[in-house]
Length: 446
Image (cartoon, rainbow, N blue to C red; front, side, top):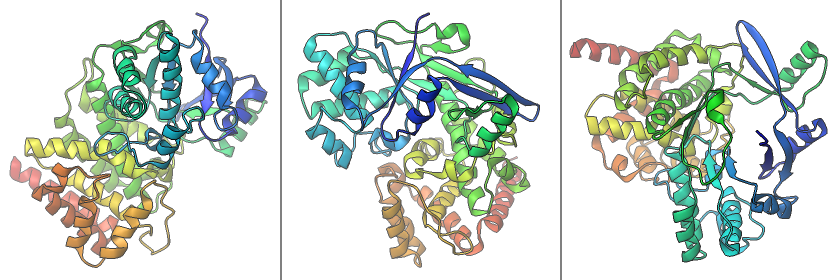
């Protein structure tokens, strides 16, 4: 029907500068070993940049025909504590927004500012639709927004709780950052330049909890699954795709691989990913209706192997402190509850901690892009030569590790063992030791 999108960039004007000279048009280039297929999207009405035009953004959010406000931001853009899922009230940007709600700088402040205006004017709400890789993303966002609103007005917080839907969603599609080479290749193929092009794989899955306050597009007619319960789909994607993605990114980067498809060409890394997905992760997931998780995991290995995407390990490795809890640590907590082996998952977490130390296996510096990079670096700087103190420093860092994991002797012992093996032997040799021990364990279990 007559739906359009107003895009809002919270920081950079680059997307606006790319899209608006093209009248909001952009190409989606789907690619695999069989070749490319291109489509031009015409859904973008305009793009606004929050720091440059806050009044226009708030006006757009306040319009009665604005029915859905969706989010695709980084995990750190939620300004929350990944370990607890609660609003980080000490975040400097959150403090700013609480004191200056008319000129918000965060997605959370922007949502509450616009909802506060609707509440005070007696207008209907809009639906808030998170499309990000957060566990239980809709409910998590709802909790964060209400906690922010409670700092301002209990009545507003109550109104949001009762009137604003926050559907859970799951989006499954690998989309690397667009490079200049991608733009040049598309220009050569189509004979026009598209600075806003998006390069992606052919696979696409979008699952949305069917919970809206008013109108919504007829997404179901174009393959979107509108369901009552998103959690099984979300757990499958977060734990299998995202968990494996983060694992291969840290280990692969430390072993010198720039791209995901290069990681998959390493037999040991490919075997490691298959092991953690099929042996350790799948038993923690309730299978979504109509999905065979073993087949899904094998499909993921094929998708990771797509050489046409050039998905950088460094890109996936960013903001690990915000990603690792829901991608790996929550799965480990489930494994502890089940009392089943999880050495591969511990090895992946140890790989992330090794990466966060800020230097590669040659001793050259790594620019670790993470909001908690300095705190993580200081832990290893203080206790690098005492593995027990080092692990204790990490596990008591409650912005990442939950109390249950900190107090688990089993997890502490496994993480100490595998990080020690990686530090003593390097990732490549440590990985061979892990695979040998997992293989021996499988034989003993049989």
